[in-house]
Length: 191
Image (cartoon, rainbow, N blue to C red; front, side, top):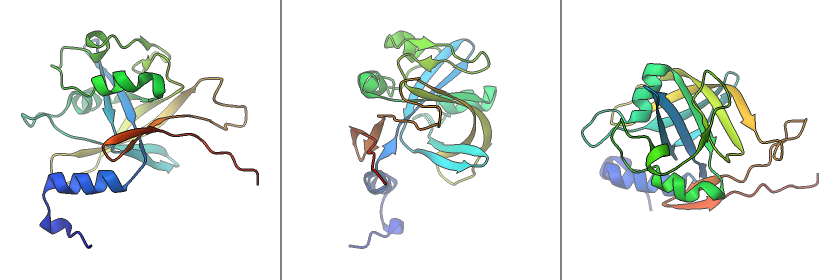
């Protein structure tokens, strides 16, 4: 079967892409505006380059065509913290995907605890094994309702239990597999 993207709807394109490009780690993005912490998961997220160290995440719009709070906050503050979701966060990650009014924090509504790590960046979700502290780099212009944002990683937090002195990291992230989620287990091979 050949699927011609010119012949299918936006919803069908999303379905085909999201169930083909797998697994995708979840970027649980934390932003802050007017002291309100916004937490939202994004599965259209991937590394872009290691020099400069950048990631790209696609952020859509609300039903009323306004930018999602994450996008609006990044545009305003130029800062974001990306937390990697592990098994203990799965339920809260799903809850935090619900649309809320901009003046309501997911951390308060769903009782998601956070921890401040770096003064100039939004907090991390408590219990995350790794988080990236990022600055806005630029937006990529595309037609449509999704805005790809390039974020430059300035620092990264790693729990001492998952990272050694040689920067070998052993994470067990929640990843998106189509419409389902799975836990990635790092496989070590003797070479």
